[in-house]
Image (cartoon, rainbow, N blue to C red):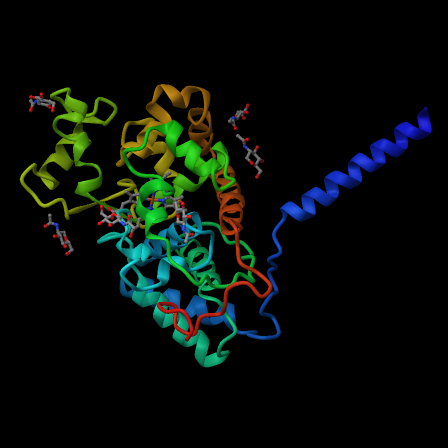
Length: 329
Ligand code: HEM
Ligand SMILES: *[C@@H]1O[C@H](CO)[C@@H](O)[C@H](O)[C@H]1NC(C)=O
Ligand SMILES: *[C@@H]1O[C@H](CO)[C@@H](O)[C@H](O)[C@H]1NC(C)=O
Ligand SMILES: *[C@@H]1O[C@H](CO)[C@@H](O)[C@H](O)[C@H]1NC(C)=O
Ligand SMILES: *[C@@H]1O[C@H](CO)[C@@H](O)[C@H](O)[C@H]1NC(C)=O
Ligand SMILES: *[C@@H]1O[C@H](CO)[C@@H](O)[C@H](O)[C@H]1NC(C)=O
Ligand SMILES: *[C@@H]1O[C@H](CO)[C@@H](O)[C@H](O)[C@H]1NC(C)=O
C-alpha cells in the first residue's frame, strides 16, 4: 500500500515534470553564442541609436513584438511586405511603426553573421532592449525562433489581436487563445506605460460615449477636457496623446496608478480597473501593480517570456530570412 502510493506519487511527479518540460519552450538564451557571439551587443547598439533619434521608437519596437507574436506566433510574419501583409491589416495600418529600424538592425546583424539570426528573434531582443532602455526591467531573452513563410492579414484584421473597443471578456479570451491568462493581460497591458495613441482609437470616449450624449464617465474630467481640445470632432483623428500621461517615455508603474484615477487613455486600458467584469478578474491585479512596481516588473518579465514563446518555429521549420520584408527566394 505504502510502496504503491510512493510509486504512483513518484510517477505523478515524473509525468508532471515531463509535461512541464514539453510545455516549456525549445528556445534558449545561448542559441547564437557560437554562431553570432556579438548579437546582443549589435542589437543593443542599434536600438539605442534609434531611441536617441526618436524616443517613441522604444514603444513602437515593443509593440511590433506583440503584434508579431499574437498572429501566427512569433515568426516575424508581421514584417513581410505585400498585398496580403499584416502591416496593411486594420490594427497595423498607419499605426504599427519601426519597420525601417528593424531593417537597420537586421542589416547590422547580417554584416556580422550572415544568414544566421532570425527576424523573429531580432524583434524579441529589440523589445527587451526597448523596455530596458526606457527604465524598465532587464531579462534574458530566449532565442532560436525561425521566420515564417506567410503573412496572415485575415488573422491580423482584429480577429486575434485585441482591439481598443473590445470588452474585457473579449480581451481575456483573445489572450487565452494564445495561452496567456488574466495576470498576463494586466501585466502586458502595462506596456502602455510608454508610447502614444491616435485620437481615432480613443476619441469615441470624449463626446458622445456609447450614445449617452456625454463623455465616458470613467475618464477623469480634466483629462476629458484636455483630450477634447487635442481631438476635436472635426479632426482627422491623427493627433496623438501619451498612453501614460504621467511619464510618457519612462517604463514604470504609473500606467496602473493612472487607471485608479480614471486616467487610462484607451477604453481597453480603463476597463481593466473600472468595468464590472474587472471586479472578479483584473482590478485587484491593477491595484497591486499600482502599489508595487517590483511586482509589476517581475510579472511583466514573466509575461513577456510567455508571449515570446507563442508557437515559435524551431528546428528546420520556416527559414532564416535574409531580408525581414521578404521570404528568401
Ligand atoms: C490588452 C490589449 C491591447 C490593446 C487593445 C492595445 C491597443 C493599442 C492601441 C489602440 C494602441 C495605439 C495605436 C495607434 O494609435 O496607432 C496601442 C499602442 C501601443 N501598444 Fe497596445 N494594446 C494592447 C496590448 C498591448 C501589449 C500586450 C503590448 C506589448 C507588450 C502593447 C504595446 C503597445 C505600445 C508600446 C504602444 C505604443 C506604440 C507607439 O507609440 O508606437 N499593447 N495599443
Ligand atoms: C482586412 O481589413 C481591411 C480593412 O477593412 C480590408 O480592406 C482587407 O480586405 C481585409 N483583409 C482580409 C484579408 O480580410
Ligand atoms: C489565417 O488566420 C485565419 C483566422 O485566424 C485562419 O482561419 C486561417 O487558417 C489562417 N491562414 C493561414 C494561411 O494560416
Ligand atoms: C498566470 O500564469 C502564471 C504562470 O505563467 C501564474 O503564475 C499566474 O498565477 C497565473 N494567473 C492566473 C490569474 O491564473
Ligand atoms: C449621441 O449619440 C446618439 C446615438 O448615436 C444620438 O441619438 C444622440 O443624438 C447623440 N447625442 C448628442 C448630444 O450628440
Ligand atoms: C491619417 O494619416 C494617414 C497616414 O498619413 C493618412 O493615410 C490618413 O488619411 C489620415 N487620416 C485622415 C482621416 O486623414
Ligand atoms: C494583491 O495583493 C494582495 C496583498 O498582498 C494579495 O493578498 C492578493 O492575492 C493580490 N491579488 C492578486 C490578484 O494578485
